[in-house]
Image 1: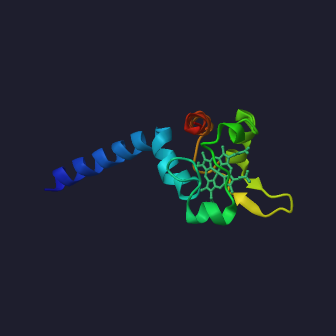
Image 2: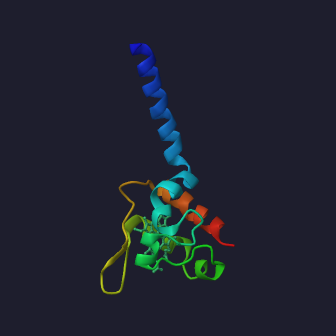
Length: 109
Ligand code: HEC
């Protein structure tokens, strides 16, 4: 019984590690609460924070990959200093952030 439990635990850890690396899964778990699964931002939190529609190709042109990378790494604040999006540097590696920026680009219609 004990052996089965530890194998199961090991598999779970392996599955989670693989899971966290996938940008689509990171998106679902860390971003969709505000931006929505499809990126349109039609969520409760998204409306409150006034998230822009990431499926809008015109809006996507308003920021560069570097801007998005910086926003995710260091967070985004309004002009008066209120937090809009918290920094993800403690949760995501640079590579994961880059992968998410590429993922965001695929959301534009
Ligand atoms: C707490 C809600 C929240 C979460 C969670 C969140 N965002 Fe945001 N995000 C925002 C808000 C608010 C803005 C700013 C919209 C604006 O005013 O232009 C924003 C802006 C952005 C932008 C545009 C950046 C720019 O330079 O204009 C991108 C890209 C983005 N988010 C991606 C993500 C990704 C990827 C994740 C998950 C790792 C994520 N967001 C998680 C609220 C959130």
